Image (cartoon, rainbow, N blue to C red; front, top):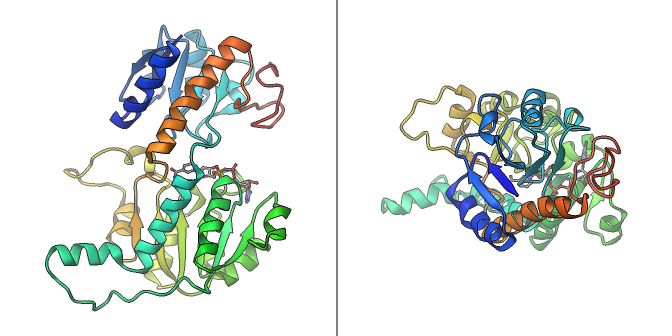
Length: 344
Ligand code: NAD
């Protein structure tokens, strides 16, 4: 089997080379993203492997289909960048549903602590031998209320971490987990109550039509003054312009953003010598109470190893058995437990 990889970085190659050799598959790496302009690079491959910011719209899917490509392997969990409806009946789409919920949840907490304890400021000061503490006061997490939106794999690990800090947890999920409430880990509430009562809000739901801009002017208006917003899920969950306004108005106390709505043109690349056209992002980054990381939450050795193993296994299992439990199936609407590749 020959796989064309798009948007590949050195850390991807390190893990995929090893797994590809073990499974006897041939890999071809492209640094460029998959787009309508680059789709022909996949010619001669059996499958393409893509990441969060590759474009897998109807035109790209048709382009791949016309090249005889039958499989798209996402090396990530979220699939909002794939037109799964259009792919149905043409190309099978697989994902890596879980590679390390710990990586993402721990990063969310790392950003929160960095932000509220002003570590990002202290680090720069002490490197310049400035040992002043002025302006570095933070607040305790102990006894504060965190609102967690999305209590799936990552949300639950984040809740466990927050419980370790003795925080009260309010949760919202379209499909609440009775187990979490029975274990006294979280109290499910309606979104409005979560917004009104949380000191910290962390997003761990997928990006869908329902969750698009779940943090916008209306929801921020409901929040406590000084609320801290953490987004390690998908950029478009937050209306960045409204977030910026709320930060300027001192309504939002801090923002920790690992993802950004318009990240696909910028994140994962070095623009340090360039002028950034995106004024909203530039202004957010200029704020002392905003921390931006460039979709880094997944980036641990454990997660990268799991991603490489599951991605290649998804393709190998499908070739061998004609089914894959990690197929994203449009027809039955499930991502797991569908007819496993036999829906079409
Ligand atoms: P998951 O599927 O285990 O959990 C998602 C949860 O969101 C589920 O409990 C689901 O019921 C809930 N949900 C669905 N629709 C909802 C809605 N409308 N409102 C509220 N909740 C809703 O997924 P996960 O592994 O926990 O990942 C969560 C998200 O994290 C992914 O969708 C992905 O976008 C993001 N992610 C980011 C990174 C990163 O590096 N920053 C890495 C992996 C995943």
